[in-house]
Structures are given as structure tokens and as C-alpha cells.
Image (tube, rainbow, N blue to C red; front, side, top):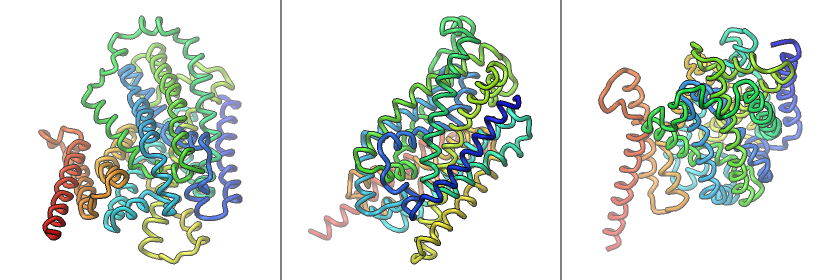
Length: 471
């Protein structure tokens, strides 16, 4: 990139750090740090939803999949829209009401309120594993972008992108995430939708021209295999119902209506982004066929096709999508340690001031672990799908039961979630070791089966024991 576009990039990175410092000066306690003071309106909640889910996999990963396979690659973002819609319609209001009633700050707070301490431990472990993977996926995406743009090696690019996100998140907490997400969502819409699509049309032609230039398989929504699509969509949609940031976002709303309407409003923002990313992927396939590495195709397109100035705006639009997700993931992992481990089990009487310092240190530690994982694993969507599978298989059914059915005993929830978690991890290890047969099945399905079976069997057994004693 030229001097102007590089300057735009570094001004953007400096702005994020500056917003983190500003948020740090405005926060007044742990509720500001972890749930933005519980007073955000629907527009801000919508920004938080979009910024938390439209990230590296959505923009960089999806454009790469579309470049390789065609429109079937857009299923990742479509699943996000479906998950956000369903959570908004069925869960957001209830989660907000329960969060305010019991002063929950985290998802494990909610789980312990409905079950017991053992189940909280499983929820905490599962959330830590999942959010480390989520953060690593975003760091890997940001590093891939900077690697192409600046000509740096992957490690240096990873260090820069990770350091900026960790710094402003650790300093400013959820308030910093709120402020930066407004900026980042606006930049995503500006760069990818308002600038990206018109430039793509001018370079690669309209829909008719692209249909003529690319094989018919590029317009088959099931081209990557319906089994693979189903596993991706189900694991991602279910993750909305057990993702800690879904709960913290609802807790951050000013009331139940804002929690619900914010989620629904986010869907209206996500859909045009899905269309724009798919369009950019198809345009890249027309303009730059047979690229050896598809992961950086969007960045290659920007560098070659965009004029000076617009190139810089497009780049920060892409980076905004990546870094906004990374920031909420870092904060979530921080809250997991500070609230769900340290305050709950190590130092229950910790002061608010010490808790804030601990949250900052935990954010630094969580970000460092995620950077290490991103160093080892470069496939963005593979990293993220592992996190979604761990989270959704272990916790989805106990969470739904906690909201809508109060007859599930704590023991059933514990054994359902813990055994499912062990199943998913063991299944993935076996599959990675090359053990064929059943282990070619995505671990989501055996994880959900184990969870459902134990939850049902142990709940029925408990009901029969109670009935026998009563008789």
C-alpha cells in the first residue's frame, strides 16, 4: 500500500487505543467494565451483535470460501443471521429479566443460579475453551490481512493486530467495546457494502457477467455438501443460545425490549453484509482465478483493484470486522477468569477496584493465549467451528431447559454438559488422529446426542424417585 493508505490504517489503529483510554476514564465500576452499565439502547445493542459476529470468518473466511466454492460459502453469515433472529425472538427478553433480577454479570452466573456449582464449573471451562478459539480465529484473520497489506511475516502481523485489540479491550472493558463497535460497524458498512460492491461491479461486471464467467457450480448453495453445511449452521445457531457474549449483550441492554429489539435490528444489518461479502468473493474469482492461497484473496482484490484512499478505507472496513469480534472475545474470556474463577473460588471478598485490575490482567492473559493458538492454527473457519461445537454441544440443552423447564435436576445438567464436552473433545482428537469410521462424523452430533440422552434419562429417573418417595 502507498503512504496515504498505510497512514489511514495506522490512524485507525491509534483511534481504537484512544477509545480504550477514554472508556477507562469513564467507567465507574465492574458493571461498566463487564456489562457496560446495563443501560444500552437497541441501536447500540444491535451494533454489539453485529460487531461480535461479523468478524474474520464472516469477511475474510467467507470471501475465501466463496472464491473457492461459490455462493455456498455464504452459509456461515446466513447462519449468523438465523441465530441472531432466533435468539432475539425467544431468549433475549427472558435473559435480560433474569440478569437484572439476580445481578448476573456472566453466563456461568446464570447457570449456577439455575443448577449448581458443579455445572457452573463445566460452563466456565467450556466458555474459556470456546472463546480462546474464537479470539484466535479473529487474530489469525487480522494477521493474514496485515501480512498481505504490509508485506510483513505472519508472526509480526499477528503481534501488531493482537496487541492493539488486547490493549484497548483490557484498558476500557465493555465500555471500550461499545464505543469502538459503533465506529467499527460503520466502517464495515462503508468499506465492504458502500465502497466494496460498487468497485467490484466496475471491475468484474454485474450479476449476468459473473454468471457467464464462472462455472454453474459456483451458484449452487449446496456445493460444499449439505452434511457439512448442516453441521456448520446447527453448531453456529445453537452457539447463540449458550455464547457468554449473547448473555452479556442482553445484560447490557437498558431493558428487556432493548435486548430483544437490538438482536432483531442486527439481522437487518447482517444480511446486506452477507450479500456484499459473497459478491466480493465472486468478483475475486472472476478477476484473479487460480490463486494458490485463497485465504488472502480479499486483500489481494483490494490491493489490485481499489484506488488510493478508497483502498485504505476498504482495508480498515475489513479489519474493523475482525477486531470488533476479537475484542468481545477477549473481554468474555477476561470475565470468565475474573468473575467465574477468581472471585467465585479464590477471593470471594475481592474489592471492586481490585476486580477491575484483575479483569485487565485477565484480558492480557486471555489475549496472549489466543495469539499462541492463532500462531499454531491458521485456518480461520476451522478454528471457529471447533469453538462453536464445544460450546453448543455441551451447553445448549441445559441452557434451554433452564429458561423454559424448571424440572431438570442439577445432577442431570452437570452430567449432560460435562459428558458431552468430553465426547466432543475426544471425538475431535480421534478424528485428527486419522481414526476413520464413526469418527468421520462431525463431533457436534455425538455431543448433542450424549447431552440429550443423559439430560432426559437422569431427569426421568429423578422424577420417578421423587414420585416413589411421595407415594
